[in-house]
Image (cartoon, rainbow, N blue to C red; front, side, top):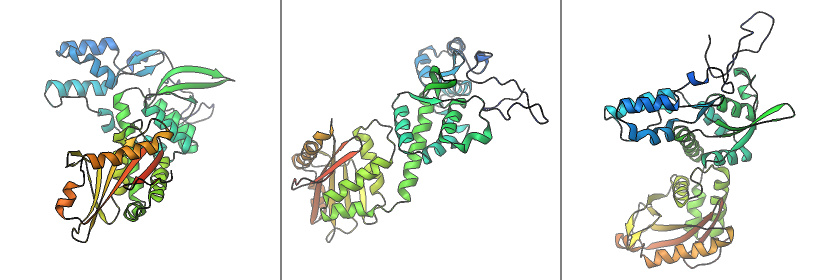
Amino acid sequence: MVTGCLRVSKESIFTGLNNLKVISVLDGGYAEYFGFTQEDVENFLEAYGLVDRIAEVKEWYDGYLFGNTEVYNPWSVINYISDTIFGNTESPKPYWSNTSSNSIVRELIEKADDNTKQELEDLTSGRVIEKPIHEDITYEDIHKSQNNLWNFLFFTGYLKVVKKEVVRRQLYLSMTIPNEEILYVYENSIMEWFIQSIDKQDLSGLAAAFENGDCEKASDIITTQLMDTISFYDYSEDYYHGFLAGILKNNGRYIVKSNRESGLGRYDLILKTKKILKGSAILLEFKVADNVHGLEKGCKEALQQIEDKHYENDVREEGYPSVKKYGICFYKKECLVMSGNVQKAGV
């Protein structure tokens, strides 16, 4: 018996490793032996006095489908129980990510075109994607096409099937991410890719645009970067906050600070030069619009919040003679920037 993720060879009547009986995740045979069943996990948790953790364990480590049998990741369940009873953890951990390099996920992300980026966003938002699946794929086929990478992710447990359909003799699977543990792998890989890609770019032009009051250029730069990235926060304000902080961190002139108390509240981001007396500060406040037509309104609300909450008080007290203020509003991958004098900028 040889175990692995993919078959090592195709069938042949000639010499070599051939004519193997392949049992894949699509087969029903031996399904319950590839992981822990629901009954197994409930018995384990009961034995260790952890019955109240059943829902948590299911959310994190269940969801793998072999044939028609759903099973848990046995390695993760064992480690979770061990860490919990010995007091090593108070919440679930992504044990899967420590068992492999997850390089195939990173490769998919690095090679992603616009369609693949959208599919990755759909997956991390809990939605379903449909792909053709070839059971006879081998290791040497993995890098030949984007579809082969999706195949590999399915057969190695990074995706699970929710629906099967045969169209003109081709098997199509509707797939989603199986659980919170695997979602962590995707999100962590996307974040690593984002950081590495930003580090390779010269984005000093964005800080210069803010410095020069060029709202249109700032809008264009931010929108271009949004179009190239992958969101896994479903476009919440937290996502945009982390995104903008990331692309501004290597600006070459300003120190970037976020969510600091000032005046009557907390501003989103501030850029400050190291020099104070001859330096400057740039305040950025963010809003998220419900639709593309709400971008301008969101910018004005952000600017009004800067004034109402007196966010510039701290930097004025520090001695900065120049403080520029910008309201920035997002809708999905569109961005509008407006300055403190509330002049309309381009998208």
